[in-house]
Image (cartoon, rainbow, N blue to C red):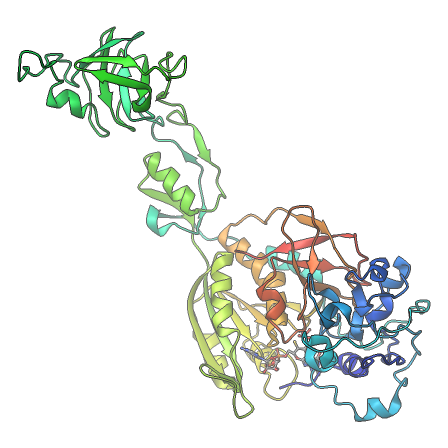
Amino acid sequence: MSGADELDEALALANDRLPKAGSRRQPAVGDDGLLPGWLTADADAGGGADVSGGAGRGDAPPPVAAVTGLSGPSGDPGDDEDLLPDWVHAPGRTGPARTAPAPAAEPAAPTASAEPAASASAAPGDGDGDELVPDWLHAPARTAPAPAPAAPEAPTPTAAPPDRHGGTDWREARRTAGRAASSGTPVTLPCDEALGHVLAAPVEALTDLPPFDTSAMDGWAVSGPGPWDLAAPDGSTAPEAPTAPDVAPTPTAAATRGIVAGQDAPAPLSDGHAVRIATGARVPRGATAVLRSERAREAGTRLRLAPDAPRGGARQGTDIRPRGQECRSGDRLLASGAVVTPAVLGLVAAAGYDRLTVVPRPRVEVLVLGEELLHEGRPRDGRIRDALGPMIGPWLAALGADVVATRRLGDDAEALHRALAGTDADLVVTTGGTAAGPLDHVRPTLRRLDARLLVDGVEVRPGHPMLLADLGARHLVGLPGNPLAAVSGLLTLAGPLIRALAGRPAPAPVRAPLTAAVAGHPRDTRLVPVEYAGDGAGAVPLHYTGPAMLRGIASASHLAVVPPGGAAAGTPVQLLELPW
Ligand SMILES: Nc1nc2c(c(=O)[nH]1)N[C@H]1C(S)=C(S)[C@@H](COP(=O)(O)OP(=O)(O)OC[C@H]3O[C@@H](n4cnc5c(N)ncnc54)[C@H](O)[C@@H]3O)O[C@H]1N2
Ligand code: MOO
């Protein structure tokens, strides 16, 4: 629907001219003087490790300052589109992806005139990563081209472009979204309907847990030191009559079964006696321990410790879970604000709850815009598959919303108007149509509805056209149509807003060093899919992270928040956790 903005175009051109195998090309620079990020090679580059900006093996490590203040790697500051040539961040890749030569890192000219002929003829496309990166960079089976010469000195950063899109600072946008709404009036729900809600009140135990002294093992409850006379749960000790004079008496049937779980008030056990008991059964009064079945032997109506039983196998309290071991009635088990997880459902049931008082989950409607979208089969006839319809609803649900509908509206301005005017959802999330193309109806429709724009564009890449509007009784988050830009909008606006509506606490901040430098946009924050195992290994920037791509995010654990100007390898950056 809309073309790339000028920065994006300039950088796409620059990317188009990334050097082919072994060639050294002058990196193109846009009007704004933004430099392809491969000039911002990290110090690790020489060792063949990942580098930001697309510098490959053998490149001279630039000073950190060369990362800071420079534009995206493969030169795309106006757009997140493949700021990093994908091969640069391939963790563990083999073949050409690992061995590909660095684009020759030559100082950039201050204009996009490095290769005028090429730039005139090159189709910059709409910023798709594949157009930006020479295809051999993606081809694992192809032969690696010869290494490029070492990078010369990093060029001097140039001025920011004059045509910045404006919009709200990324952190401020998140704060605004988090303050735009508050949670609804608490409701009391049957526990099984409370899953995924947030507790509106603390949960206090309605009982001791365990509620009685409980056997932790199958075996015998014993009283005092052994050996012991076997008793029945009713307290009787009479053996069955022997079947023959030389046959030892056998325990009664009741004694054989013993005390089982769920049986109330077993008879007290007197000193020197033992009674069979099952795991989870109530321990009789007078019992001093539970002896596991493998630690003793019955002989007729007598019970003795097995020869190989550990010393102290029947010591006072052994294998008895005393009443109240986990909690006493009235103990606080969970604070208000805790999310009702499956484990919480288990705990509250154990503690005696049938219903829980929770914050209602916001009701969200998703409107997928775009006439070009197909909902089944392969892309055909110039149309593509809708990647957001299947993704946004479950993502919103994972953030804490109840998705009441996902509707496909094509590019029909009237249908959009009707949908917004008629919905009773707390939040409407639209996809696509946020830009200024002829079919981009979101902003005009919001104007028609007298909506108040709380966030009108954000200084973030990808996703800068995202918006947040107040429609009076409800809010609207407008996600850009490029799929990774939509993800950026989910994390920037939808996440904080839904947390506010659902009463969910913000996740604990996570920071980790990047394993490779990531070049930045000169002014905007970048959100970059990374893999972070939380094991101290650092956050690994991923491949295929252009705005139209989901391949990177699909295997990511987090998005790294890369400040304007980029981050050198080893720099700790904020990580936004994905909500699953
Ligand atoms: N003149 C300008 N044009 C554009 C700008 C700009 O600043 N000035 N920004 C570009 C950026 S950045 C983005 S992101 C997009 C946002 O555009 P829209 O929100 O209006 O989205 P569309 O034009 O509808 O779609 C953009 C792109 O994404 C594809 N798309 C849309 N919906 C889906 C979907 N559900 N599944 C998969 N792909 C989808 C659509 O086909 C387009 O290719 O605007 C730029 N233009
Ligand atoms: O490039 Mo856009 O940044 O996909 O939001």
